[in-house]
Image (tube, rainbow over all chains, first blue to last red):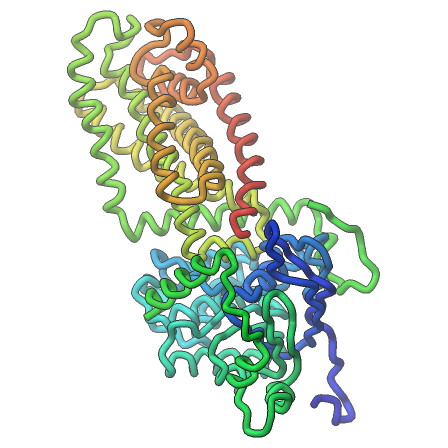
Length: 277
Length: 278
């Protein structure tokens, strides 16, 4: 808990959603989600495939307009100020977003250009960012030859080059071996501790979520069904419960969801997993 | 896209960025996208060579035979010269018209999402892609030039003319690459795109002045050719590239048509490109 010291850090709100809703025809992918995330939090989004996590993140990152409801990210409205939101967020999509036919350095240069980072600072900032992610030695190799963990770290470095206060990580460890997963999380924690960045992370690895997230929202069929710290959520299920138990208990037994796009999601997930390994 | 004014309580930031800065950013962002594409070419130059096969075949097989047919060439220049400009435009068209497929590919991979969450305006992204198609086409132009010189085509090597040819090629390629991007946004899958791409290339190419003069065409086809931007690209190329080249419509109209069409298509593509992230 922050706030014990005399100079308590001012807790500011990084993200606020109010009754955020997205419909695709008859299907309500995200249903009146209301949510507040503080600056510096590592916030986990969990839920079954097709629960609406990706749709929620797409709205919060301005890729998809909401059907109704509203949200602000880093203080900007996702509907009326999308350009400002984009300037203040980083996004690491679940899919492979680094370009395999460019080198790590060239991928970073592309990001630097897209984010309008001053030409004079570019080289230095790119070099430093790659070093921080442990990619200095392979900076001038084509990213297509990177290992899964290296690609993920490159993608994170790309998303951070413009120093966004809020970072979205969609399944950052999907398809990675345990060692690579550990490294990715180490970097994420380091970023939070050093720069007080807010991270919104989705994952199917409950052990990771339990270990690294300050708070969690469990999403099922477009709604938040539980929200709180990992400890709080586990306590709701019973003594000795793991986050896996929380997941299984709270996600409705009937939710063998067959929503549209599920097949596509599985296909993509598998493919990105195989391409990362 | 709605823009709200200064909101009370918002963090002080770049909302009031000057027009000049916004324009500077736009250029930077466009060039960043184009530069990335050029770097890809640099890593895999083999693609350029394989693409060179087609113009070689057209000039050396089709060209050599058709040159013997009387009445195809419009008087003042030999047929091979006439054809060289058309084939240059064609090779640029073939590069550009399949450009949309890379957008679908990037969408399926996730690279597109990276573009779309950046603050770069969609039009800068589209224009960057379009420009890079132009750069690819320029490499084709180099091959056609060399080949044409070998075959004895009367090439005008005045630097200003070469610059003009480069401008026409870049503009023409940008135009068709943007059209291709629009198609990609509509069809969304690679399989469908391949089908449509093939269907589209033929009429654009044959309903133009690329390989025969419009005077040989029946009236209805000539009418189609007159609204085909490729006709104006070829017209400009013929005037600028060849020693005795002349323009039928005037360079001003040629470039005007290409510019306006590119601007209109870019505006449409920019709207549709953003929706690919859905």
